[in-house]
Length: 215
Length: 347
Image 1 (cartoon, rainbow over the protein chains, first blue to last red):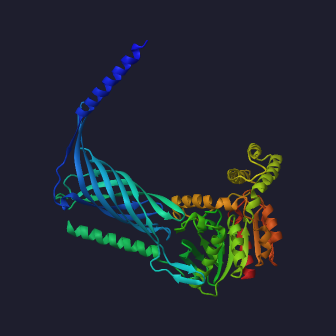
Image 2 (image 1 turned 135 degrees about the horizontal axis):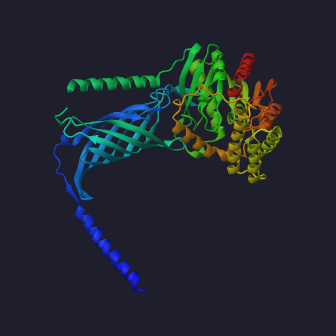
């Protein structure tokens, strides 16, 4: 009766060690040696940002490749190599609602992107921008203080606006238009009224690397 | 490569400039107003959508329901007719619609929201001149904010129009129960949607009949809207025809977030607490009370209570026989006629 648990424990230990060893032997990571030149590692991006129904706008940005590695994995007898990148990025955007004058704003944010690219050029990325600022632009605005009413110059409000984007894309090796992306973005505007306003938007656009030669 | 890129940058720059101009332009032509002007007051920026015919500089300021409703929610056939003759100011209250700002939850009070309305009047006078004249209209929750505003300063208003307004949310909870029982019994006797009305009795058995509970209030409030749907299905009251508001006018996520937030802040001060019944006698401007006979959300009882208690020498009560909580959408022509007649007489 007591031998069964001992055998099971032995089996689990064996499985853990051999399983781990097997995994190690199937995954290999190589750090890529990156160019020393700033412009070689910098890409620009431009695209649509908004929710289509309520906001539409334009976003421009830049990405600087900080680290890159190639991971080779073996699954079901086939080898797969994916490129993993960490990039610093910055964005600047302008968004408005064509139907109303109450939802216009500009934003800028900065952070880090993790991106995985497979051999076919398909990409998956997560972009975290802890440093973000959103400035709303209001139409004609008057400030009322007691009986005094004054027109406000360049009315609007500033909000701390960190954001998180998750998206897919496509890489075009060696081309000036070096890729495209589609992200779903979550931004939080705070302090908004008496709390923090969650906002969602789509981002679709293209990346450019002007060091590349091919059109 | 360089030429197309320069062209693209130029196009993008032009597009951005156009977007910015569109976002900031306003039309203040009095005969055909179409302007969005924000009033900044005590750390909040609140939009006023000013539309209609302001030739006589007579404006109807509207206070939406909720709290947390949409100013533009009034738009439709009735208000189109009112806009043809007078200027109409649709106002997103503090923490509602597309209002924005930076303040704490403790700062939000009904008193401050009433001050916001008076600030709006000051702003309108600055834009359209001191000879501008105003009527105030409140629907549902706006029927509580209206008295709160008038009790602060009614000298700015030529008249008060109460549309199914909740001037006493303090007793609404118990009136819900009485009204459900009354209407339910009548509908069962008529053989209308019997299973639904029987289920209403079932719901009533589950709520506390002696003490106001916020959860039970929300349950009854939601049941009231269901009951109106049932009355519409039985062709007992007219169907609601809302036609003025566009889905793109409000960012839906922002709108719903604002509703949830402002209600979470104000509900405790309103439900079972707030009542202007005792002070309605202090309101002396001409008043018009418009009510749907089958309003399940703010029952008809309050129409008579408002009429009996208002201190106005000139006051009129109109009951819409085939309406529920929003007669402007169910008997819109009669609604517009009553409002225009009242404004014509008192401008």
